[in-house]
Image (cartoon, rainbow, N blue to C red; front, top):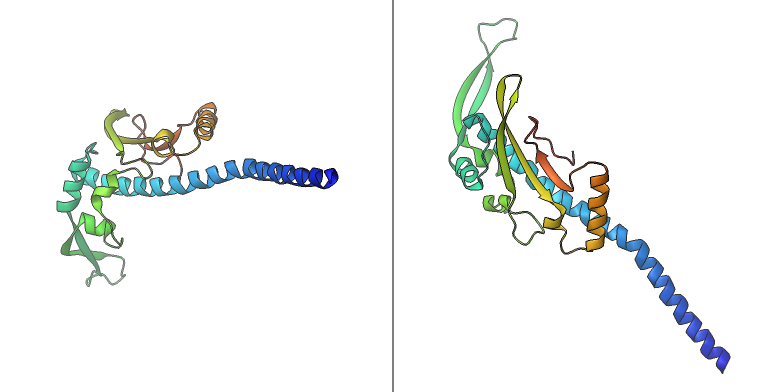
Length: 199
């Protein structure tokens, strides 16, 4: 009798230990999978913001730090639709003639193929309880020329707050020991770049 009770207790202990071992192995794997999923969605939005800002800079010779200004520009701005035709007087077929055949809205050019796209959602960081991206702009001196720059920082705390805080602390510490920004970053206020730190 005592022997069978002992076997049952041992079996339960083995099952509990196996579960705890499995859970401890899977916890960082699940965290990494969730981090990858969230980084992908946020970086996709940052790429869209970058595309919009590049158009804005082409028309205004600067970036904007305001989403309201950017959205107004995207909704009203228009770019020409150009048709390239061969120059009929060129027998070598190396020259062409550009002919503007119309105009298209910038927002349509960038986002018309997206289903259920809402431009105002572009400002909101996914998984952050409604926080908005903060865009910072400036001009830096590059060889005597003032160049417009933009930077958008998205710290881990903004979009990982509902995950294990110890895992977030460990992730931040790892990034900081490698002198990397602890989160996603697009552009720079000190360099003329619009690259993301995930690229």
